[in-house]
Length: 628
Image (cartoon, rainbow, N blue to C red):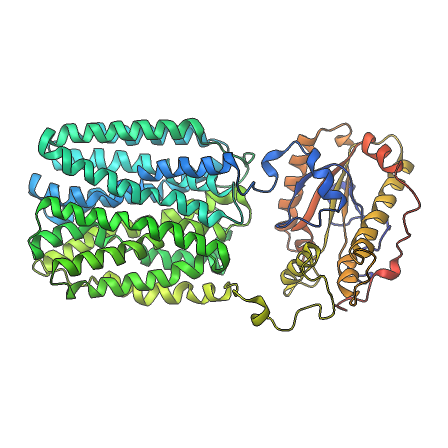
């Protein structure tokens, strides 16, 4: 880079962007890595990678992406979803039963189930933010208690308004305290396998969609409605108690910040996804609520058989939740899987009018169960993929959930009203038309833009570094990622360190330590990457490019003298937030690929003890700007 963009190697100068003369800019690595704001790790032989093991801030380390604890969270989330979406997908058994039990129109009964989905989503904007702030266990415990309490009070209900308050309001509020926090916490344990993990969790809706209808079919004729609901409450109590014991939040609390992050809607992928999913969920539950009444009214199914068809549709949903998640992790991405699934669901809703036989309904239920489950299962995974800062996952998920909640609140009752207006005919709902014309345009374009080709060699026949025999090295991928983020910025993206000085005994020792670290970092970037087994690469430009992108800041504040890593970590959080929100394009690119390091006296002494005969790295290695 030229001198007008970034300081050269070894230069020591005050940074005009930092207030109160507390910071200075010059490149330097360190040995006390605390937090990493990049999305990918650099080469394993980099000094920062080795020393990151000393960090006590485990919550800000990269997601484990597997292991006993991570997969335990996925299993516990599965238990939670059994009692949220599993219950919601099973509401068809109550839709059919309440119509006879309460003698109320189908649209009235639909409001009970719709309230559950509405509160599950809309409460998520609050519980998601509370989860980010460190109150996961409190929110999760209250949500569990409300779900069990709602089922117990519903067991004593004899009037419509009583069921509306207990099964609709109380259980719905409890679900809002369970689903969004659990998905937000689970997403912090995985990165590469996140879609699969969330798919395993969401498959709990298929498990619950089979358990609760079976219980209703077996118990209602024998022990009545009241005791059936109490048995269901017992199942909820046991499963949620186990989940409360083993679920753990991984990240440090993010106590600062507003309840909503309106700036997220300035991101086109996030905005288009929100709009698309709103119209999608306006019609997706039409089948789950009305397939039972349809089978009885139009095909003369018995009540038990109508429950069977709902169980089948929920059961095959396990396929639609796990396998698409695996495909999304493998090469497609969640957006590129959920979009065609939504299109298939729309076509299936239109084809409902053609069903005239039991065999046709069973076949339709299997197909719709798979694709409807794909939409439900990959919805949170796709939403999670649009959030790069995992500490904001709860807030950003809650915002979309709250908007989508209004679609879930009004969709099934409107469908019931349309059936009544149509004289009991189950013609395709106009909601499906809205879905067809809104969902696909809303985020198909963005999905295609994010599509990762299966065969990169075919998709990109001219690699960036034509003559480089080591393009598969992680350092090259790191460089390519930075280049992808350059975009229209006036300054290319850089990697480097934000160094917090906590020892002020000797300015001379500190300066020498910084210069030596700078020399090692530039040597690593240019020379260690340039050779492997004494082999020179044919194309030196990747190394020159990576070396020229090296740029760091130094924060000098006497108030940090003797500070511990927790205090430095908080200061680094503030620094990142300040630079990411800066309107100065010079600051914005330099926060993403940045590592936090703390230089105390022990670190300075250790650095000065390093050999001085490292091959000299000169400024000549900096290529002219944009020579990539």
